[in-house]
Amino acid sequence: MIITVPVTRYVTPLREGGSMPGIVEAGDLGTYVCKFRGAGQGLRVLVAEVIVGELARRIGLATPRLVALELAADIARYEADEEVQDLLNASLGLNLGVDFLPGSFGYDGQNETDAELAAKVVWLDALTANVDRSWRNPNLLVWHGDLWVIDHGASLYFHHAWGGGITDPARFAAQPWDSSDHVLLERASDLVKTDVELSNLVDEAMLTDVVAEVPDVWLEPVPGAEDPADLRAAYVRFLTARLATRQWLPGGTS
Image 1 (tube, rainbow, N blue to C red):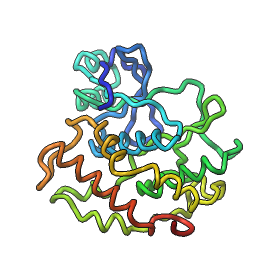
Image 2: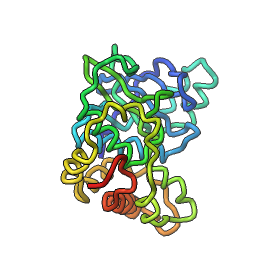
Image 3: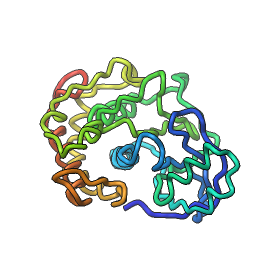
C-alpha cells in the first residue's frame, strides 16, 4: 500500500480544475499536490489515480510518486478562505498526494517526443479507457526534459457503474476506445509492437500488486463486494479481462 504521511501545512489551492486540488507540505518534508477525498468526483477517482499511476510506473513511464496524505482538523482551522476550509473539513482522513515537480511545465507539443514512449502512453490510456489526454487537457508534464504522465482519475470509468453491484467485466473488456483526439497518437510508433511488449509484461500478478497499493478506506463497499479484498479482486478481473481482448487497441491487434 502507498505510504501514509501527515499533512503539516496547506500552502495554496490549484484552481485550474473543478476539484480544486491544493499544494501541501507533509511530515516527510515533501511537497505534494493533494487531491481531496471531499471533492465532488468522489473516492473512486483517487482509486483510479493510484491504479493507473502505479501501472504507468511499472511499464516504464515517468509519473510522480504517490502517497496517502493524512489530513487533520487543525489544518483546516487556520485556513481563511471559506471555500478551501469547507473542502478541507470534508476531506479529513486519507487523501491522495502526488509528488510536486517544481519547475515543470505542461506539455504543448513543442518538445520532441520519443515515438516508443508516446506509444506506451497511448497503450496505457487505451487499456484503462482514459478519456482525458487530449489537447484540451494533455495531463502531461515536462520536467528536466522528460515527459511525465499525471492525472489518471478519468480512467477506469466502469467503477462508476458499481452503485448497484459489480457489473460484467466482459462489457468493459470489449469496449472500444476513441483515440481520435489523443495528444500523442500521431507521435506514437507501431502500437502493435508496443502491445506485444507490454502485454508480455502486464499480467494478473502485476495488476494484483498495483491494486494492492490502494488504501482500504478508499474502496467503498458495493452490493456483492462489501470488503476491500472483494473490490480489489474486481478491479483485477476487469483489467485482466480487457487484456484478453484487443477491441480497445488503436490501429490493429496483436
